[in-house]
Length: 401
Image (cartoon, rainbow, N blue to C red; front, top):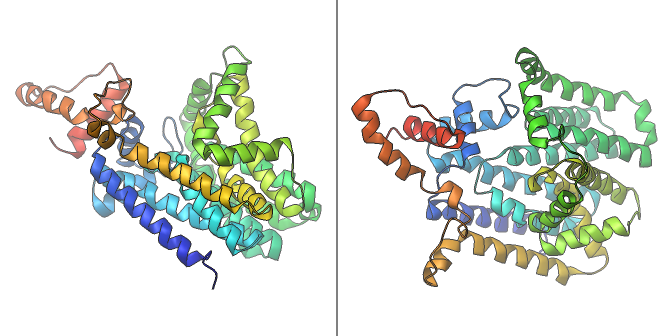
């Protein structure tokens, strides 16, 4: 039996996930402001919220029901979802290529800086990437086996993806491009449209919620995208592209860029991966050029992008390069996870400019100072800063200090 199998991958991925759980306990960080907001939403379930669709709040609500409102429990779904996403990638790659490609694709994904960093927080990317990868897997199964059942599951997963993050809509564009390139006959079949109708029906409650709230979520997206301001920013685009080396890792993003500059359209398997990787990366890069885009906005690129890079490197017999890329990413993760331990051992005094954890530390101390004031006067708290407000609401209501 080959060592590049699912059992060995899963064992490594599970151990890595447990190590990340240990790190969460060890660093003992507070919630990021966005996590505190999401927790607040989770106490008032709805089909929509000010800045995001509802899936993130639903997931936190479920986690709180199981293990409470402590920071570890709130963040725990992220660890689980990234593990499940890597499993989805394993089966995507195995379905398209072979078990060796599947092994290294899944291993590469779960060790990317993107996953290493965001495993420490509960974000919309964790739920998006799970449902995006699940949708892609069942879309591939549907195309290969032409069974309505797979189209239905793909539609359900796609709808849940739309309830996770709105850029899931780009999945449809990738589907259209791939079918145009390789499977034009699918345009004449009903199954594709059944899947799209199912996805739209699942998403519909959020659209209705936005209608009743003056489409406030879409106004927020327009605001953070700065699309109403000065257009065309080459520096923003360059900065966005450079940050992707940190998101995917220097080796693997370098190979991905090479495959963009020198396309490798060997067969429809590669065309499928190109369609789902570069459409997403291309659209977000265009947004970065026109206005601005944050580094994580292109995160779904690396579902198909990981398989594309690994399949190409294995075909070119570059296993050592794959192992080097994984090792670099793991080393970067370890340095990040144990940054405080390392600086302490080296007797380095950290400041707000040199501590990457600065935004998720110190909130308990602020609450400790507010506690006697609240107990003395019994007045409602008023804030002029949304960050402080979100953090204090979480600590005082969840932690009952």
